[in-house]
Image (cartoon, rainbow, N blue to C red):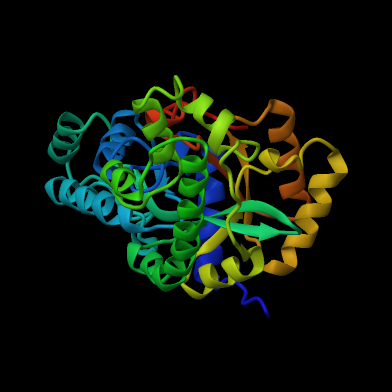
Length: 326
């Protein structure tokens, strides 16, 4: 399959994300209850405003449905305070207060200006026999929605794996059913909802134990998903008008050796890779420095993401105003 390069507009998007990341006070990796996060998209918008961030992205796993609610709330707030920012490329540098009265109104109603919002999605795919994740970003929600046919394909694979894992859990003695899991899910069923079921029924104490014992890659009930190639995933992102960053490279063991990350990124470039998530909340200072160095070696933009899931993954706090990465 040939890879279609990102358009000039999309490349500008990657550069804008890089610029914002280097300036700080951003978070480009957040999950809502539409995938495996605990909070709704509306709650996330309010949290990001309260945190004083300059920009953020909603990046649920293999779905863009949460973007609808996040964008709707931001549009409502923006209509109430029309001077506040949007992520539309033709308005990025034009917003200026018309008067001190407008500035006073904005700062009174909102503790800070509305942050720029970048619709996104985290795609699960395969690269050289390994599961990897790609963070896709878009200027507008309409572009992100162009991925929906492809996401439905990924959803069918997820559904098949879920049923297989439910059967495995039943073999282990748990009376779990898909119907019960659907009652726990905001949108689509995933492993986190199996974990919630296990906690509810006293099988484990918390989500960490659920994944360690049953649901994680070494768990008793784990079954891998059928995944599309990273090249195919990136091609779909580019065709929709987005850009693709490799997510948390340290989680794949790529940052354990200086040369390994360079070699992996070099082999990802022909797939159309646009950038690297160099600053992840769980990456060590050494892994962050290496990811930044490799990105600069290949002239790739970088982004920063907390990978926040709310209470479903304790210990990962979203970034706040004043958070810097360089």
